[in-house]
Length: 273
Length: 284
Image (tube, rainbow over all chains, first blue to last red; front, side, top):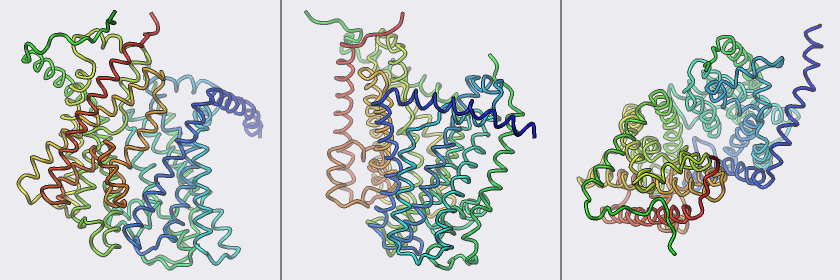
């Protein structure tokens, strides 16, 4: 009980951090606008790439363009939103290297929320909006047979995806507690995971597909939910209800990431100076 | 009146041998400097390899969806394109070079201007050393991984191999020049971040990293090739290696690269001269 009220009382402190961030970023107005515009660019290019590939072929891994776009939409909506909220944890290695993390740890607030709020990249908001837009357009053009269940699935899946990608961001960033120069390794799973979930899973094969899709759980972010929304059977042979397990994968992933993070913080030894 | 800048060329033309010796020494130190970043090298090679798998599977699926060949590439050619491309990415160093911009912002660039070597030349020499180290450590791991797991197309014409080596060398110089120019915007803007974001966004897709540029309609691909340096950074060396075209076009693409080397280096030289006329080093 006491712990709970104590946590509640931290709220205003976090809010102050967020407000300070927003104010400082918006004060350089031109560069903020440039940032907003150019941040959409990355996601626009991802979508354009898929469209260019469909110029050369009519089907990719057994799916046509409108079907593949549902997966692109689910993936980019989830990734962009997670990147906005949690993606900044990537800079943990700079904090570890420069010793800034020490300052964070001595404050009476949680280390992770502080790091996320300390430079919440508001410029990435444009990308999150665009990602959500891609999903809406993809769902609208796919001419789905909407049922209440599918509506729920279309809402639930991107939310689970945000949690899942957030967990991947935190887990891979935690690596730098042990290995400061691990930076790009994280990108293989965060941005790599985004690329993996952008395309139908049938495109990949062998141990690589098994590792990313089932071993790490990326298969449940976009591919299986998209099959359930489209009402298609899985060419790989899993039953239809698998499309609904995204939250069941995302929540344990978040728990696991939190555990890794806590373990990392506890084993953090300052670089000193 | 004539203005004095720190980098008025010393009389190098009289004796070219010491000049080459200096250039080689700077290149060697660039090689040694980058060879100290061992863990970052390992991490980078790992990430390039993972993306190699992702991109290779996607392009192979495009080929099989298109009935065997995609835009004139066989599946084996596409696999070579992806894996060698993942290796070249670090050799030409498309992204993440902010050294010059950082030095301009902090004023450290002043010490570059005091040296008896032109800044463009000394940065280029360092970059060639870096690229040499990257060939050993960042190029080979993805290419060998690709050979191990996929069916890659190997060159069949004898001239392809030397032409590819030349093309990669030219690509490194062009890419260096482009990065130098992007960084040099900091002379005017103090913060080159905006220019760098645009470069990062544009260079990957326009150089052919995400998909071969031949996937685009000709009316986009051809002007892109001739009027911008981007395809010369990755697409040209890769097309040369996989022998997408006949020997004539293959050599012609390298000739286009040669033109871009001249143009980009000349621009670097002019930009640097303009910048020195207006550079105010802050701080004391």
